[in-house]
Image 1 (cartoon, rainbow, N blue to C red):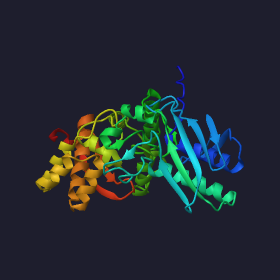
Image 2: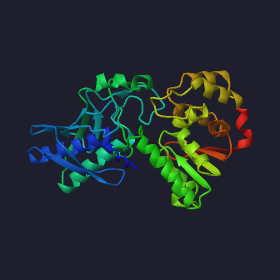
Image 3: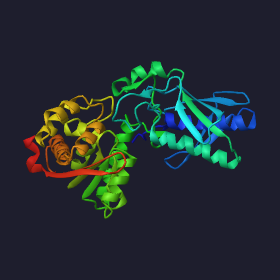
Image 4: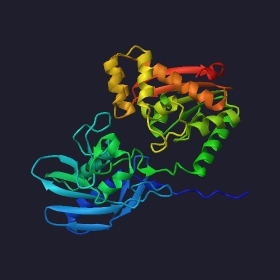
Length: 368
């Protein structure tokens, strides 16, 4: 038997921006180049980054870090992510994006319109590292941080940013700090192995999630299930469902959010952002089935993201829409495996608010 080589994880743009900020602020304080820094990642481990470039004056410092995406390189692999830290006349810490970092122009994203496309977790990481250093060095001056990516505007053309309304560059992303090589046979093998472990432990009911955040919500929803029952499937929904059936799992609960599960509901079983777009006409049809009127249906068809559709339906009081969407997910899943199990779907917002749930068994699989 050939032993499969373990694929190497990389780091997110958010982790790189945080490391660059730490090095830049220390350079500014000490008046000398900081060659490398170690930061704590949200996933719970430390990572060390080397400064690719470092410039400073008495009032500001700029440090660049090269993004290494590991063995699953994406569009931003090899990019230079820079942070410029300067003293500010205003108290506190301010953060913005500079050259090559996009700016949000449409609703439905986790960053408000008009702000730099630096997502919530990277914002928290960057602010946190600055706060730690400010406290350690007893700094009383205000600090301004600007994140930039010199090649960002060009690289962004290879992403979905423009369609999402992020103009002028890339996004600074990442909830874990690390990049997993999702598009790999090794990751699929780990899913199959996790299901095998669950089955061997006596689990007849497993919970499959698209990532760490949805798994956290799933654990809260199913506190009675053992640890082995929770399986991260990444973007491989169809593969995971088929493995569950193949290994004799009787009940599968899918827990996730609007973006990826809107794709599952329409029958897409590989839910990576590059694999298939969200079908907003499909979501509008579901909304129509629960009584949404024409003006709202038009808003749904013109929406920027599935999350925005969720916000629209919530604000108009159409909570049964989410049950309908969950039901479509269940029926798509059963169709994918040709029945033979019970499938449950639960839907959450990014912040963990429960939206709805549905359960279907194999006798309904042919109805979709």
